[in-house]
Length: 134
Image (cartoon, rainbow, N blue to C red; front, side, top):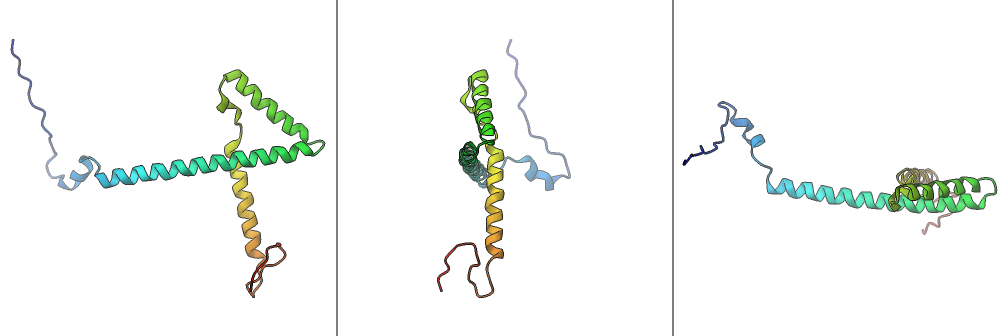
């Protein structure tokens, strides 16, 4: 029983030569661009997460010093430790890191906006506390 299998052929619809590029695989250059985009996106994501973790740490440290607001810090730490205990995964304890990064970006942009608005016409800096050299 010798059964021959027919060879597979690529069939292109007639009159659609313009769509030939859509059928062909992606070129090497587009693959490199996609890879570079993924690398840049990954680096940006890591930087955003680190900024969020630092912001969350500083915010919790400031809240822990203020008499009534220290209960917010305690509640956050209890919630984070409870999540780690329930799921047995350390990454479950980092609650709100991305939101803290968004908060930090807003603060930085607001400070930059205030800095630009405080510059006077001579190119000096107003009351923001930065020394401008002549």
